[in-house]
Every structure is written in structure tokens, then in C-alpha cells.
Image 1: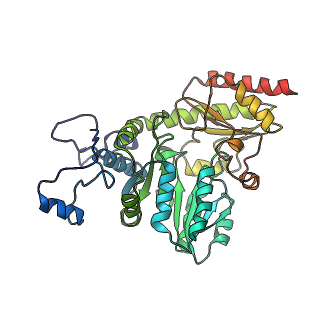
Image 2: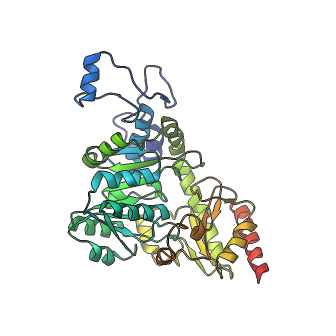
Image 3: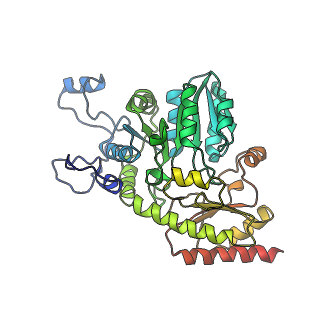
Length: 397
């Protein structure tokens, strides 16, 4: 890219990070190699000692993975990106890199089920977590102690679309000498850039919208170089929860169309959410860009669109929700989201099924709740499939 051009987001998502090799390739190269050859013994010694830059072993760095890291960092406005094997590996790496026994986390109670489970596991190693309401800045403040090192949240939350006020929570974190960590998987940097609002670290499940077609697992960590490279990378380098080069190449292709896709997902989702809100068989609809959402003003200020995830509750419980889910024929019954194909799931028995009933209720995951990830099919076809679900619930009466 020419030095005198200030590239926009869509350009960054296509061009950043690819340093063309002597082969002159136009597409990003795929380096499927576990190790690298050194010019001589002295060069090997310098690289292993950290006195010289260069490839050593693909657990410590790979050229294809590095393109993905640089590109996503550019989109998030981060100094450094670090790719991992999954989104959960990214969260684990942040914790292992930044925490020690005796430290404390204040986390949203509206988190992806496995994230809650991970924080509960950390208690075995002396790291405790207090869970508070995501939309209550005062609760985060009150929960902080002298041992608090991280405030952790995802916004919008999975699956209810609750928002955290990023600027306000960044202030809370920094007053207590803690770091604000934000899971930005739902919005991606196309809709929201937490670092620009004061967050210290952003994590992603690249498995979701960054891939966009349900092909591979991956995660990422973005932030200041001193934190990502200096504190988190040593754990990733040693323990090895790294992204494969092939998956990085797949995700690079996903980034090229991310802006187009996430905007289309958001438009379809807004249409579906508005339609659901008009249905008499729906008790509640959860979507940040609906004007009836209690945090609509914050959503408009913090995000450029609502994203692709819509949740709603049907009267009754699991029986009614199962009937609805089973009646749909177009929507895929799978727990993944962010795909071009629309998906449907019952969070209480899938993504949040390992949590205790008390934890599910605290997070608002009730038995009648259904989560949709709205894809890129014709929105009329999506709505027609949802009508099959409502007909099945009505037949139970």
C-alpha cells in the first residue's frame, strides 16, 4: 500500500499484512511447515536467543498466521495481534499470561457458557471471579478489590444482546489498576472497536463471523504490543495453543468479505427481530438495534449496526422451544453462529447447558429462550421457516 494513502476498513481487511515474497504471488501464501531452515548456526543461535527476528518453529510463529494477526490488528486499531487455536484458547491465554494465584476477575454474568466454566475452573488455581450484571457499571465498581486484575465481558452478550458500556467500564478498570478485556466476536471490528473506547484487550472467536462459513476453529488476542507480546505471547509460545496456518489462510479469506457480510447479517437480523416483535406468540425479543431494547441508545452510540444474533422467548419452556426448533427446515440446528447459513439453537440445553440452573437464570437463559444467528439467505425465506416453528408451538396447545 502506498504510504500516502490512509486506507479505510474495507481496504485494510483485504490488503494489510501481506508482504509479497520473491515469487510475486497475488493471493496470500500458505506456509504449511512446522520448522524453518537457518542460513548458518550463528543465525539459529541469534534467533533462539531472541537477539534476531525471524522464523524458528511454527509454534512460535508462522508467516501465514502472521498475516492474519497483522490484518486483524489493523482492523481493531491494535498494536499487536496474536492468533490462537480457538476463541476459548484466546481467553485462556489472556488469563494465563496476565494472572497469578490470588488475583481476581470481575466478569459479566451474561457470558458464553464455556467462558463462565473456564473462570470457575481457574478457582482451582487460586484465581477467583465475581459475576455481576453486564449493564450495571456500579456493580462492576462495587465488586472490584485490591486483587482485581481483569474486568471481562462480551458485548452484546450471548445470547440476550445485553450491552456493556465500554467507556464507563474502562474507567472503572483503570481506577482499580485492572485491564478491561472485551470479547468482540459478535460485532467484529466492522461494527465496534472496543480499544478506541478504552478497552485494553480484545479477544475474538474467529470461528464465528471472521470465518463466516463455519469452516475452521480459531481465536485472536489484540492490544498493546507490551501486553500481547510481552505478557501473553510467552504463554502461547510455550503451551502451544496456536492457530494452524491453514486456518489462518481460511480466516484471511473471511476477512476480505467481512464488511459486506456483517452489514448484510445485521440488516436481515433487524428485519427478523422487528417481525418477531409483532408476533403474539413471542414473550420477548432481544436485539440491540430494536428501538424497544432498553439499551438502544447505547447500542447506537457504541455499534454501527446491531449484528446478526437475535434471541426470543416463546411461552412455556423447553417443550415449546423444542417443538419450535424441530419444526424449522431451512435454519440449521447447530450451536455455531456467524455463518452465512442461518442457525437456530436452544441455549439452555446447548451453549449454556453445562451451567447450573441458578447460573442460567442469573444470565437470563430461560427454558423458553431460542437463539437465532441470521444468515444471508433471503429474509422472507427465513421468516417463512420461523412461521413453521410458531405453527408447531400452537399445535401443542
